Length: 83
Image 1 (cartoon, rainbow, N blue to C red):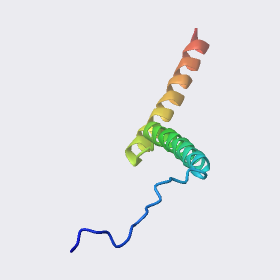
Image 2: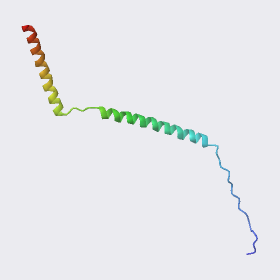
Image 3: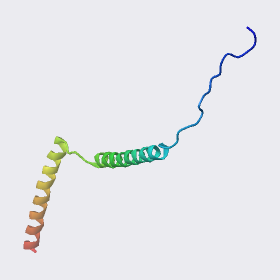
Image 4: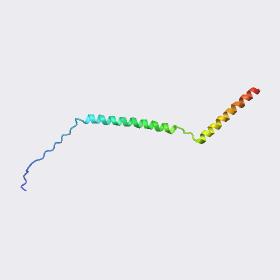
C-alpha cells in the first residue's frame, strides 16, 4: 500500500424536512383524537361505576317496602277518618 487514495466517497448529509410539518400535524391530530376517545371512555367508565344494578334480593325488599308504604298510607287515612 502506497498511502495513496484510489477513490473517494461522498455522503449527502442534507436532511429532507419538506414533509415534516405535515407529518407533525397528522401526528398531532391523531393524538387529539386519542385524547378525545380516552375522555369518552373515562366518562363511560364513570357512568358504569355509578350505575346500580338491582339484585333479586333488592327487588324483593323493594316490593315489600312498597307494600308496607301502601299499608301505612291506609292506616294514616283510617286514623284521619276516625278523628
